[in-house]
Length: 335
Image (cartoon, rainbow, N blue to C red; front, top):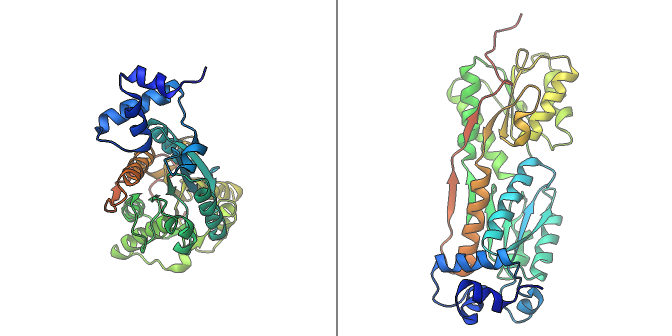
């Protein structure tokens, strides 16, 4: 037998009206009590009819999540954190992969609006904010995660990408590297853009030559090829900073293809610290993002926005941390 609203009310020791107020985000009920009743609903498997709720203009207890590619371990871990926190608040989560393509972002934005989701978390790159118009003009609350758009007056949860890029540069400079290169995502990805900026400025401040030709733009599928281009140069880099762990794995494969020893012949540093970073050969030095905290914070800020539409936009910035493993080492000089 499926649980009913009567079962939930009995288990929580409250009236049916109170449970209804929690479902619809109404009534003078404390946050703690709301969360307690929501947990009871989740535990008992009680699910209000989404169709009935949508038809009456009430909450559907569904959220959307837009990510570039769910096969990327970073976004898989983000999705899991968002889903877990969403469930804790009584929400289901629809996950959509966009490949950082504006036409896909716009398509999913319209689809989620039609599904009457209560809010959407945006974790994908985009060239034009206008692709979110179906949500923005449709009154659907949104929040960014691991991405930002300068003109968007909406909440965001990000890591300090600039500081992360700077930390990678400082690490490699301290190891004696002076010929450095970068594998970066496309310019529309704000997080990658900030990581490159932090990396470049730190090198420049240290008096180390670095210009745009030292940056190669790459997706996951092309990362090995782009790294091969860098490593086949006559004056090849002694270290490569990669703006995510998947790009770093491509660089590791390229080095092996050329018979180079990592880190003896070239150090490689990634960004994210996904589950793959500790199982690569050699284990990957990388800038760690607090992935679970990011997912939790994004859901929490979006739920607050759903409950308080006039809430002022928040920008939550979390600190990165360098995880040093065996893919980076001191540069001994050319032999």
